[in-house]
Each structure stands twice: as C-alpha cells, then as structure tokens.
Length: 216
Image 1 (tube, rainbow, N blue to C red):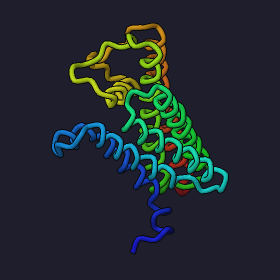
Image 2 (cartoon, rainbow, N blue to C red):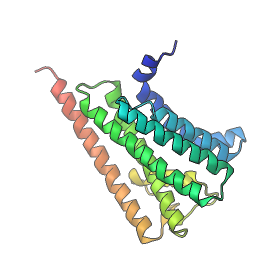
Image 3 (cartoon, rainbow, N blue to C red):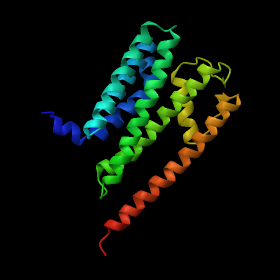
Image 4 (cartoon, one colour):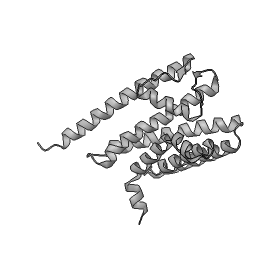
C-alpha cells in the first residue's frame, strides 16, 4: 500500500519521473490525438504537484504549496483565456518563483546528506532538470517582452522554449532555434555557463563524498 512515508521516501524518484514525462509531451501529443495545450497543461500540473512533495520543513512546504496553487491556477486559467496578458505574466512569474524555490530546497537537502544513497544520486539529476525548466520560463519571458527575440522552428509551440533551454544548458546547439536579440543571446550564454559549472560542481561533490566514504 502506498503511504505518505513511502511517497516521502521516493519523492525524488517521483519528481524525476514526472519531469521526464513532461519532456516527452510532444510524443504524448503525437500519439494521443488530444489537444496539445491540454496535454501540456496536464503534464505541467503533474510536475508542480510532484515538486511540492520535496519540501520537508514546514515553512518550505507552505511556501511551495502557496506558489504551486497560484501557478496551477494561472496555468489552468491561461488554458481557457489564452489571450490574457495578465494571466500569462502571472504564470511566468509564479512558475519561475516556484521552480527557483524547488532548486533551493534541493540544494539545502543535498547539503545535509552525508552518504551516497538514492536521494543523493537522483537529487542532482532532478536539480539539472529544474534548471532547464527555469531556463525555459526565462526564454519565454524574454520572447514575451520582445516578440522578435528568437528565430523559431516550424510548428513552434510553448514547449520549444524548454527544448531550447535544455539544448542551451547541455551546450548541444543544433541551431534550429536562434537567439536574435542581445538579451536573448545573453541569457543563452548564461545558461551555457551555468549548465557546465553545475555538472562540474556536482561531479566534484559526488567524488568527494565517495572518497570520504571509502574505508581507510
């Protein structure tokens, strides 16, 4: 039976699976035949709900729940009011704050883990995925403020911002989406640098803990 303790034990794994599920959204759309907007909204909702499980401290839980509820409300309102600028701004702002908070919670929890276990392995992976989502929100915000910020691909959708964000932090650079304005290029450069430093720091911490655990 699935209990609250079991959910808490596997919270990183649950959150990780839901983020990967979100990244597979275009495949869900192609196979299901449902409305693309509806699938994006549902998958994003699942990511937010699973992310809210991460907080363990009361203050963090309350903050996560408040930001989560506001973000979910703005996402669903935007689904039915796609032309509302105020709802779009609200969704961008609160979703950014929510995932930033989740990243902070992850970092604080990983600092307290003294040995290499499942949480220590899955936590940094989840943090990297949250970083990609944060980048997607920022890229969408820049394109909202200046509609000519990117040269977009054929069949562009809101998911493309997240695609470009992950392409940026992994420094793959396919060239199918191109930043055209100085702010967009600047953010792309920052995401490139953060992505590389993130991996270097995580590997360094992982190796350090592994060495400290080896019997002397």
